[in-house]
Length: 552
Image 1 (tube, rainbow, N blue to C red):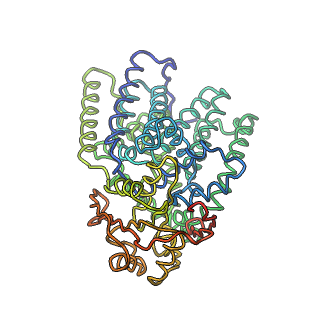
Image 2 (image 1 turned 90 degrees about the vertical axis):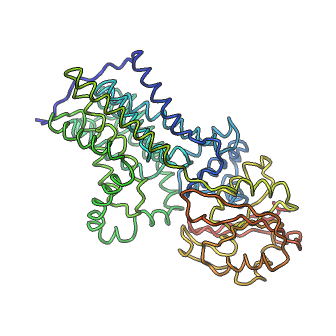
């Protein structure tokens, strides 16, 4: 006999009050996620690559090179070397591409794609909590979630975190509807949503364990295993995920090693013990505000005291996230964003219990308003990460170059590359990166380091081979590799004119502090002599070669 009791669930039909609550959630989400939406300086590590992934798929959809997909892709990367498709799944960039097709290639259209994901996920979570409890609990849970400063900031950059957690909420709602009703259409829809979630980020595959655990606590696991539709849906999921698995194993070895680590395979129990301490610490330090943390603890305690079976689906999401990410050694707090909707639910759960009189209801409502006010204040107190100058530098190059080829040596090379494409709808220019041609490494500057140039003569040879005119460098080299320092000395002392200096103002990006973007012109520019461009891509363990006739 299950010690938890199941309450009756709410009506499926939305009332006028439900729609008003949903609209209030949508408006709140839109306000907090579109902060400074027209500011092209907002930036975050990896977000530049995801921006370029969206533009690549935008251009792919316009060109439809269906007979030469691989050649098209490597040629595109040679022109704009800032892609991460291959070791990152393409679903979110695909949605980005749709928005880019509608509104043009710009950062704000990509951010609208993130907003669309968030509104979808919040709607699904609202429907789930409302179905299990009531309108007030659903409204508070979704409002708590979207006003978490940790959640809101992922709407400011083109990162996959909000799309990922949004697809998780959609998958959870659809799967609950299947378990609740037994209707096979919800089974297939939840399978489809799960596939898209994994195609948003590979780590989402662990959600399958969450769903299996929910079937088990509901006492429906064995009957589901005897259902042919479950096996058909599972087979379709496997078929849909096999290509992603193959691509990940082919191109994602470095990223998997970074996340899982060699030590996990040798001593997994030690890794798990450490992570069971570190992950809750991340939750307290980075993810939840103090009021939400306290309210979620209260909500969990009340659910156990009341033996509330309805809350198990949320508790299982927290438990599944904790157990799975105990095996992931890479310590980035954004990885566990999966569990935040469940914590937001538990923080709102007292609203479902304290309903006996107006004093209880008013107290809960007042506390919720105070928490929301505190979180919204915290959002706007914190400035977004930004770094200025890269948009301006790209415009200058496009307007003043004698050659379609620009050479860049910059930590923030991805944003410069993105702006080169965003302001060049004809795709007539080419970006060469110093950290591909002078040296190459994987993820960090010293990992799998290869040095291809050692002297000024080597640098000059590269400029002449590819017909370089303008060179863009950050004034301070952050790689600490000698050839990159030598490049800057050579630009000052050799046959180059300093055309423009652009100060880099930054916030929360200390690696870009005290930087200027310096744009030099190679006085002795020559027509290109290379017949091919060889680009090592250590992050995927490959080297690509493309004809350099593109730059003629």
